Length: 90
Figure 1 (tube, rainbow, N blue to C red):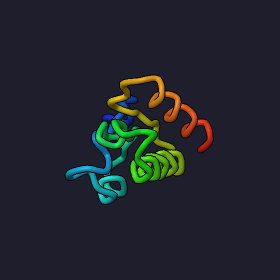
Figure 2: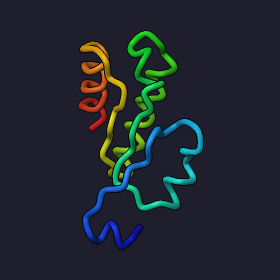
Figure 3: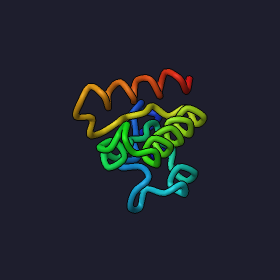
Figure 4: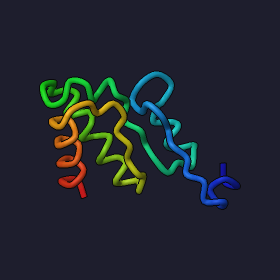
């Protein structure tokens, strides 16, 4: 992983917050990006727990200087929410 980073290869943890994508990987791996799982995006902005989860993931990514990828945005309302949340967290 270190050799890849030296070659400026960007490394992402896919579907963060689900399955085997745990906090332990963030500590062990030298990541560049976090991809927010689409299961958190699909009910935005109607589901308060998904809103909180996305805000926590974005804050974590900002604090560790990771780029953020939101997978599964399907409408303007979701896109606006993600853009606003990212802008508010900087």
